[in-house]
Length: 131
Image (cartoon, rainbow, N blue to C red):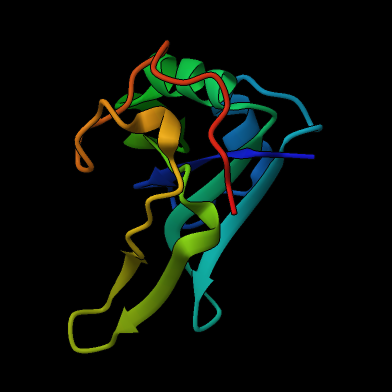
C-alpha cells in the first residue's frame, strides 16, 4: 500500500504514466495518476510511493530537473504532498487554471518543529500519519 505522494507540475499535456516513471526513475510498482480537468490534461500528476523518505529522496533528486519530451524541454516541479486525503480540486474557467486546495489539519505530530508552509527535506520525518 502507498502512503506517500508526490505532486508533479508543468508536465507536457501528452505525458503518460510511463513518461513520469521514466523521469523519476521509479518502477511500475508505483502508481501514477495523470490529472485531467473536464477531460483535458492539466500538466499535473500524482505519484504514490511506499514511504515518506522515498518521496523526499525522489523530490530532492528530481525537483526542477528537465524532462525532454519531443523537441521541447520541460522543467518539472516535484513537490511533497503528505496531505493526500485532504486535497480538493476546483477549476476556475475564467482563468483556465486548476487549483489545489489543501484543508488545514493538525494530524502531523511528526512535523511539530516545522512551520506549516515550510518545505520538508530528507530526514524530517520517518513516516507521517495520514488519516
